[in-house]
Amino acid sequence: MRKIIHVDMDAFYASVELRENPSLKGKPVVVAWDSGRSVICAASYEARKYGLRSAMSVAKARILCPQAIYIAPQFPLYRAVSSQIRSVFARYTDLIEPLSLDEAYLDVTANFKNLPSATAVANAIRAEILDVTGLTASAGVAPNKFLAKIASDWRKPNGIFVIPPSRVQAFLLPLPLQKIPGVGKVTLAKFHRLNMFTVNDLLGYSEAELMYHFGRYGRRLYNLARGVDERPVEPNQVAQQVSTETTFEQDIPFGEINQPLILLCERLWGQLVRKKKFGCTVTLKLKTNAFRIITRSKTFSVPLHMPEHLVQAGLSLLERVDDEIKSNKFRLVGVGVSQFVEEEEVGMQLPLL
Image (tube, rainbow, N blue to C red; front, side, top):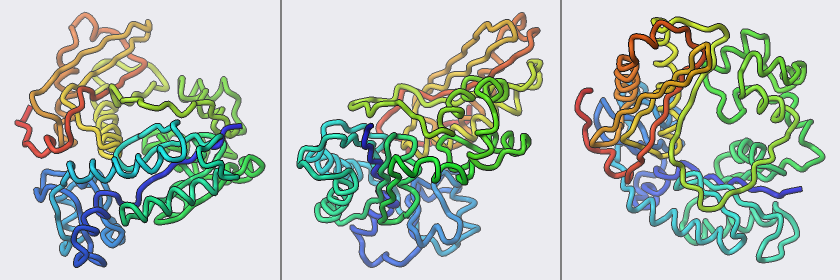
């Protein structure tokens, strides 16, 4: 039985800026390039009260909260603070899987300080982070990564939530399906069409039925509904690509791919912003009803930093599909971004595609 902690800093970029400029405390602070075409990297909790959140366009944020204070991102500073935080982690375990600058999984099944429980380790880490950086962190403690990730968000900010093995099913059964990491608007809408709203509803479906409705993801849903997640904490894992895909309920003609592709691009953009990953290469993936896989890629000189650029790139790749392939029907479409760059380069304007 593993003991996993998911540590997630509270509004990390914004909190660092508030630490650097205490006069801004209590005010709605947004970390973003002050341009209507940019997106929010982070929002303070005061700004979130107005509905502002990461990945939201600055144009929309200005409407919701005209008094918000915008601060351009300082990624070298955030990386320096992130390095301090990871040094704290390393005092307790060497099984550390960073997800971004501000969050990581830790396997503390055994810990260097011989603390009696994972909860004690999590509290010690949070206290040490506060002492070293002046910033607060939230933590989730659970038997696996899936549950720890959910738990870390349960008592934000500056909180800890523990899911012991004996309480896994009691915790999961009433859990709304949108709380499952990776479930976006499209998947949630599909759940609702199937009259599924909580994890308890998932338990009424067999693995085969879930795979019929959700493809390969159905097998994972079957396991997650039972609290099963065998993924180990993997140190030094560097993401080569962030991608998402969808399998259609029925095979569709080429001419109907545009709309689901646009929705996928919008979903992927949210993932990229949350993961703090911005890349130059966009890849389109299609699977025909004969299970033939087609890919098309395009690399730009600067990273994509607005959602419409990703949409335009995806649609332009769709246009590059050969005519003889277009005559097929398609069962799957996917889109991914790779060739990630240093975050501060994202501030460059990308020409229209």
